[in-house]
Length: 169
Image (cartoon, rainbow, N blue to C red; front, side, top):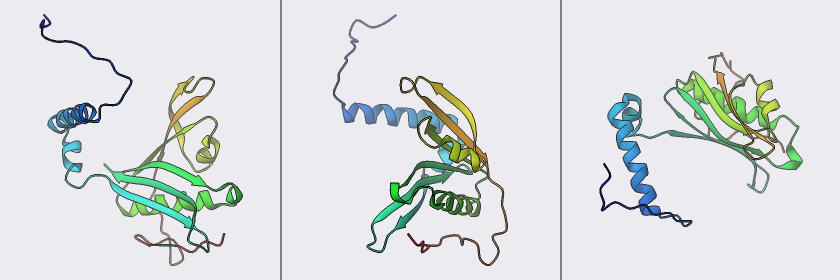
């Protein structure tokens, strides 16, 4: 039975303190019931970022991701309009996947909308594992995954931990 001293509040302004409290409570619950959550907390997800820079050192493309739980979690992939369709996106993905394999990852995940790059990701071996129709209205939101296979990169292939790879743009 609810207490008479409880009340609900609704707001259209973010209360960062209250939001952080909920985040911390969920995190504490996850740590209590999941060995995997507890194990990743001390170090957190390990960033994996790959950027393409021009001659002025301006970013013209990049991939932002993290690795944890033997997964590569790709958060963002972007290529400037004038460089799209030239293979740079594939290079970014190949570099990220290669480094993820070096880090012990066996799978990759990402999210995309129907108006973004689903076909591009499918060409790279990603498959849809979930979809949310009408999000946003008239569109579809996709969850995708790929099993990563360790392949011998040879002497010419990407090297783990490589700080920067020159790409002619």
